[in-house]
Image (tube, rainbow, N blue to C red):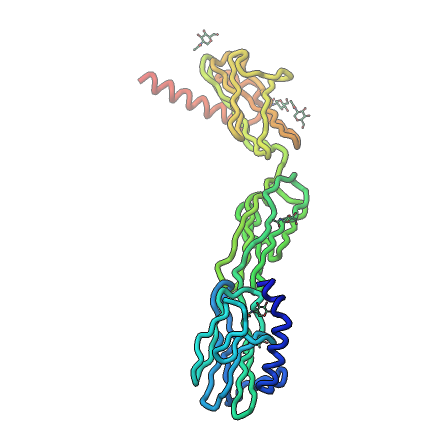
Length: 344
Ligand SMILES: *[C@@H]1O[C@H](CO)[C@@H](O)[C@H](O)[C@H]1NC(C)=O
Ligand SMILES: *[C@@H]1O[C@H](CO)[C@@H](O)[C@H](O)[C@H]1NC(C)=O
Ligand SMILES: *[C@@H]1O[C@H](CO)[C@@H](O)[C@H](O)[C@H]1NC(C)=O
Ligand SMILES: *[C@@H]1O[C@H](CO)[C@@H](O)[C@H](O)[C@H]1NC(C)=O
Ligand SMILES: *[C@@H]1O[C@H](CO)[C@@H](O)[C@H](O)[C@H]1NC(C)=O
Ligand SMILES: *[C@@H]1O[C@H](CO)[C@@H](O)[C@H](O)[C@H]1NC(C)=O
């Protein structure tokens, strides 16, 4: 196309000149809208990129010569093809209709096309605009990212299409959920953990279904222990202390009794970490196990700790608050119930 176009340039100019002489077409004489005289071209033609466009020009029997032009370049006069573009085809050349087809329309075909006729020695032209639509397409979108809580984040979603697509951002998880932006750029200053998750960019125009892509934001934050309950266990039984922390990345856990760090496999205990939870298991609880334990949760952003008490049914070791006391009582009830079950 490109090379051919350049080669025929002088020829095209010549063609326009000769057409002007032939029909005595004054440059750019439009037919007024509502003019009942011929030629009558159609309203603007709108097609999708890649589709075919048909340009029609209605005639009457007074018409002696006809031509279709792309801007000032002749495509066809009568049955003679002047365009070297193989996509341009003569569809109909009758007394009433003169039409051409442009196949595989592309954006550079958009523009004014002119039907030019000679009627009663009067040159007349009628103009139709070919409008090329392109479905929305996201060309470039930010990659998934990981940031620390409090930092600023800029997401981009670059889209093309004709008409220009409107770009919107939605947050698919956390808070706020739903529409969070209507620009190619989404700026989040001082991001919070609730703002982590998937973001969806949608580029929409009326041509086709929207193009949709997603970006994932991971927000790192230091551990926060939300569950660490005091637990009761009888001597000779199994006892389990649990500690749950939310953190990104996931927290690592350590257990202490007073200043001593506990290790898995030593002194009849096992430490198991599963996701957000850490479990300290005593295989065979003895009197000396009762007491105040500290669960420490840490990641590279910081650490926190909580104390958990392992208490026995008789001696409520170290429990001086009523909540823990009530729990011990509950435990005792359960113990008695179990005891009753075993007994009968
Ligand atoms: C045809 O398209 C042209 C260019 O986009 C515009 O100026 C004109 O108003 C349109 N005419 C009609 C009838 O829609
Ligand atoms: C119409 O003219 C434009 C500008 O010269 C050109 O790029 C395009 O290929 C032409 N289309 C047809 C169908 O002739
Ligand atoms: C997408 O945008 C980024 C930043 O503007 C740029 O570095 C990258 O080359 C672009 N990628 C593509 C495929 O255009
Ligand atoms: C638990 O420990 C006690 C005393 O240390 C021992 O007598 C008992 O056999 C142990 N029980 C189990 C199940 O290992
Ligand atoms: C357990 O120990 C922590 C500090 O190590 C202390 O703050 C807490 O009060 C203790 N709990 C009880 C019930 O003694
Ligand atoms: C628990 O946290 C307190 C205050 O944040 C700190 O002073 C203490 O050293 C921590 N304990 C452990 C065992 O990390």
